[in-house]
Image (cartoon, rainbow, N blue to C red; front, side, top):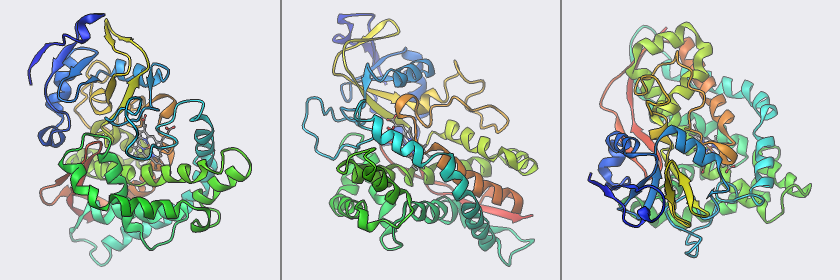
Length: 412
Ligand code: HEM
């Protein structure tokens, strides 16, 4: 990691520090913290020479940058590719990669669809599924420790059961959901070996998703069918409907899987925090948000500068790609006391793990509901939880995730 001053960026405003480390390099994806510290310490704005991009990593500036959608647009892609100057080689998301006014109608439809009414409707069923799943794991082992992989048996199994049902897609083919979203989120980074590894199936997965975004493929009453009803009412166009359904395929499952893996890993490695949650299961949502802050399952997203824009005393040039480090902001000591400590008694609200501003995660309360149902069922039934073997990371250009977290639990 070397630091010099960027000659190009120094043309206007204060000189911009340069870091040559590749944030998408294997070593950085394995352990992003040294680079995050360096980025925050270097200044409000940093130039990353490995990809000819700019970066923000301090809480104050990531927050302000995400809020200022006029200066930092999403419509030129929230990945590394700059679709202001290059023809899109992939389909842009009609929601997360749209600027106002195109963003407004799909966002309104999703906000309404995923809002409090849906959460009230889903809570009873999702609680029952969580209880059944945890009871199944603990069955016939009362008193003895039970070992299982928290990622495959809970973090994946639970959202893969409840969310596709709510979306309204059939059982067959659900195994495509995670690889599809994995590819999309990898593709926001450079075309490195992670993208290459998931590329061979990309077309097939994309076609499977497209087929399931059509009206006739979606079960009555589900989120997908309701998006088509919104098109019938004229709230979005008929052309937008399958694209809005697609945004739920892309963003609704993988993110939650890895956030649940993060909270289960955090609790298994912090036994005293597990006991706090057991004593007060009402803390389930806070514990989840604290894990989203601490682990930031979505690490980064790009924006594109719409003009020369001041950040601190420096200037991002018009058209530059800017990488927003949500994970670094979530551990910025300027904003958080003891940021590296996972603590369910802190107030994690204001973290940027769900983004911020007009694109802030529209499904965040759906994710919180899933977490609340699962963690409550566990807290009521599990006296203690610990790591039973070495956890294994799953590398992705956008996600920070676990492939496997072996745990041992003792039924209450
Ligand atoms: C947007 C994270 C769960 C649907 C976002 C963004 C982040 C994020 C960081 C902002 C992207 C940007 O600013 O460019 C997460 C995390 C989740 C999660 C960490 C789980 C813990 C979900 C769920 C759904 C969902 C369950 C669907 C039910 C969306 C959509 C957007 C979005 C549609 C785009 C919103 C817009 O552009 O207006 N999410 N998400 N997410 N998320 Fe989530």
